[in-house]
Image (cartoon, rainbow, N blue to C red):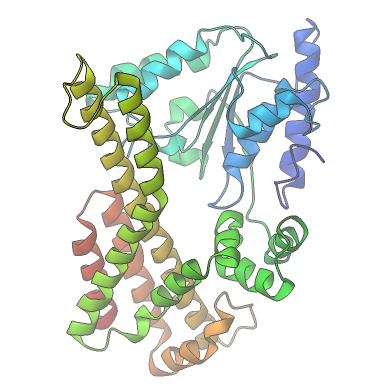
Amino acid sequence: MSVWDSLVGQERALRGLKAAVADAGAVLRGEPGPAMTHAWLITGPPGSGRSNAGRAFAAALQCPEGGCGRCHACETALAGSHADVSVYKPRGAQTYLIDDMRDMVLEAARLPSQGRWRVLILEEADRFGIHGSQYRSAGALLKAIEEPTPRTVWVLSAPTSADTPATVASRCRQVSLVAPSARAVADLLVRDDGIDPAMAAFAAAASQGHVGRARGLARDEGARLRRAEVVAVPLQTAMVGGCLTAAANLVDAAKEDAEVSNGTREQAELEALQQEFGLVPGGRRPTGAAGALKELEDGQKRRRTRAVRDSLDRAFLDLVAFYRDVLILQAGSSVALVNADRRRDLDSVAAATSPETTLRRIEAVMAARLAIEQNVAPLLAVEAMTLALRAA
């Protein structure tokens, strides 16, 4: 067992990270350690394990044995409870907030209290807002990354280095992850999760190498049903009414996903705040309680908005995979299909349309994805997509 076990098919990246961990010990002893540096950027496609790699690296840096996976340092770092490992995610619907960046700068200035290093993990570093009112705070963050406090390590993650500001990427050493093969993901599900091999093979193929999504599909029948509804959309666009209905169903499903994923957490956050301020139904609110409640509500609203967008993004990628399979059939290629379980539907769409039509439909889905990123109302963006699928 080690902290690296959750990373599938990333042998090349692991060699670099393990070398850095080995040299980190030398740096602490005042010796040269060229494989270790203070700022890292982990890149890779969705599902490649960027978050897992960042946490594993942080745990290995704190572990006296370089990532045994069994000691207190490893367990707490992986669980997110290590005193000297901080994990940041965007709290805004689209970007990190100014307060997020201020918190990072203050955190980075502190020396480790218990561990060997103070590690700041910044997930989704492609969501930095460095324009307008956030420019000054972003500048302070860049300076903190460029000139860190001794024994402070920054670990950022993003899909590609081009997705982060050039000033950030240039200050980091890059580690590139790859999409693991379906076989590797299926083997992981069978070995670590006890999933039936046939179900593991289906989930690995349908997730397109996304380990987290594969786990969800393998374990949750509801996730499989939602995916089935998404890949059925291409068969529902013959009439305008069907297009609008399909769009409404996709958005409603995304909202339901957000409710399921956030409902329990939000209730726990509210109860913790009520306990902190001693709030009781009908009672008087202590000073500061109203502001804290408003801040909590705003944060939860942003998180729900983000969850809806993330759910729709997964749906868009499933649709692109469907039309990719259609294009493979139209081209007569022998490349493996992502949606082999929907072969009859794929054959039907492939026979009824041309490759040019399929490409226009893929463009329509990607346009909807871009519209959501640019803050277009989800229902409007998805309705425009389904109508474009019909028009193509």
